[in-house]
Length: 71
Picture 1 (cartoon, rainbow, N blue to C red):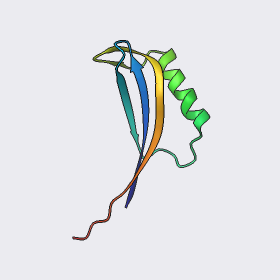
Picture 2 (cartoon, helix red, strand yellow):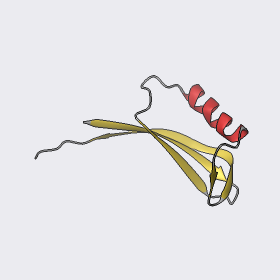
Picture 3 (spheres, rainbow, N blue to C red):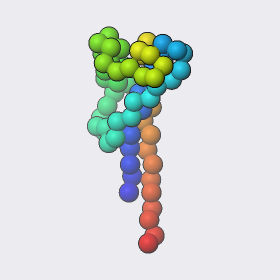
């Protein structure tokens, strides 16, 4: 079984990173779409963290993990 997650990594007001994880993202996502949604999240101030508001984009990554169960 292969699991996938999209990690949207932001910088918050205190300078620390805040990661928003989305499980099972679309397989045809583009970097432009990811960038646009991250800018929308920042522009509308949708989320906050223990370190304050999200103030910048630190990165984004698609993580795939394959798990093989034997029993």
